[in-house]
Length: 331
Image (cartoon, rainbow, N blue to C red; front, side):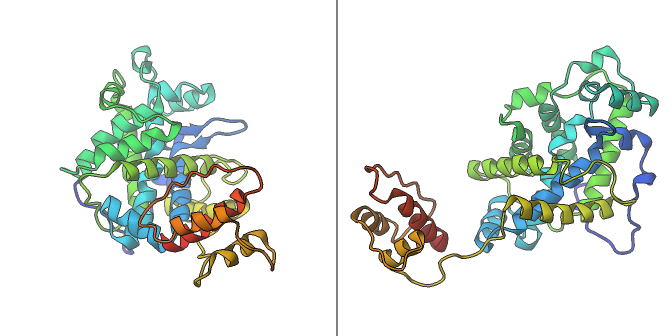
């Protein structure tokens, strides 16, 4: 691996699952009968969900994301997808793979050993951060974004690890076959996603890290649902599996009710008009509380937190709808 970002090439043959070492294909991410779900297939699924979610956002969100992460705007969805999919990379360790006896037996048949001394590191979220810190630093030398990115990826179970905890989560006492399998898995995955351009941000601010952590959590939740993403390799090639996963992600988001961005307020409107819209009544007038709040929303210049305390019947619910319309239009 080197510091250059691999782009897609029409001349290079598509990588097939059958071309991968058996040690890569047997690594599992989801246990279950009659079959589990392979780690490589799962991270491709979650990457597909992340890309689909980002592409459903507004142009303003995409501009913010591109600026926050130092990415070309047109390349941002694929770059973020490639990073998000790596969230479960730390499952490729003996301490996790031993948690499902059927999966462990398959690993052992493929030549991956489970000596007792190698089982001490078992938290895959921390292991993901530790292993990716090494791999991403080697692939992108001097990249200042590696630490905040791996912390966001590891936070998909709700806890952002400290650097000390990441250092302590490096797998130990494992046979060399494990590292070789992880290296091949990473290379195959990154070659399949092949994001264009470069992530150039050196200092990613906390809001962007938190946003990415949220994207990972939601993408993983959706991509782990067997009703939407049946287990197994769904194509002979990795690219084919990913493209199929993109279609499954579109269907899943439609079923959930997660729409593409649409501007809801397309023309100027006074407070009375917006209240009528919120109430779905042709004749209605804004209450004093709603008028006062609408004046406060006249010129938002960024994210807004509005706390409203008033007796029942003063129109707080309709005010929430009104505020959403104003803020969506402004931001």
